[in-house]
Amino acid sequence: MTAPGKILKRTALGALWLYKHTLSPVLYFLGARCRHYPSCSDYAAEAFGRHPPWRAFWLALSRLSRCHPFGSHGIDPVPEGPGGAWWQIWRLGDWVWTERGGEEPSKPPATLDELPGL
Image (cartoon, rainbow, N blue to C red; front, side, top):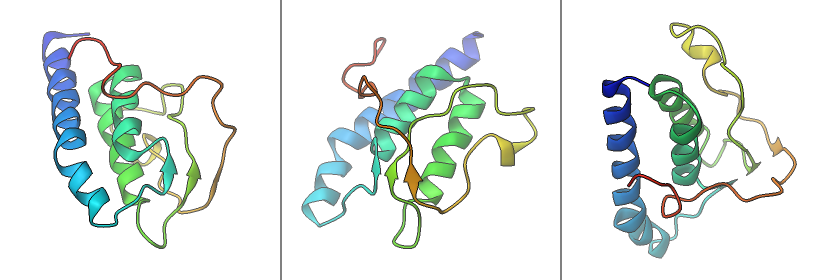
């Protein structure tokens, strides 16, 4: 990975860590609950751990777009594979608002606290 890619990845993981330890507990206290497993912040962290920053950004954005009362819910692991050309953003994420019926992973996805390099 290039130096700018590493910087983007570390910046994104740092922002996710900051969100998870500051704003997320406040939102949880106010009644906001996760509709998916893993949570959106854990999903984004795992996406940045597995994929290049460009694809990870679109995967996280597509997940956030599904996280609302009329959106999907359930088990939704980070997909494997390349996902398409860099300019085909509609193929870089999952934009469908249907229920997730994926198998629960045998090993839970890494949380922000378990990711190395932060």
